[in-house]
Image (cartoon, rainbow, N blue to C red):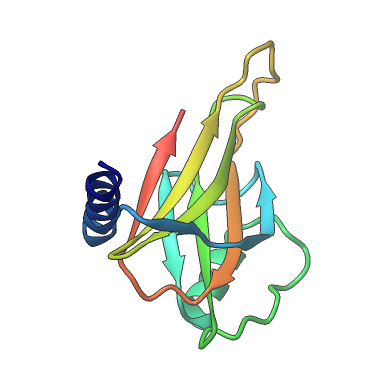
Length: 142
């Protein structure tokens, strides 16, 4: 009985691993976040070069210049919610998960729950992580 149970357990673990279900969390750090950018539409961007990073950074309301990134070792991920009609909206990268065959970026959207100011906002979140070499998908959680 014990031997059969061990074989079943090993088989189950092997199948999970072969199907890309085994995962690990990838650490990241926030480079910028806020509610004012020039990006008017919902956007999810994987950045692997300095020129693209500079273009994205220019769309922010930041006075300071962009940080220096070694793109041979790092990847930047930027998410933009697009234009919203009031304050209180937020977008955030909550988790980056590596599977055997892909990377999944989990993004959360938060809507205002109480009275907010009627002013146009465009929330964003930009993070720095290790160099990503697998295909990336985004999973939105409302």
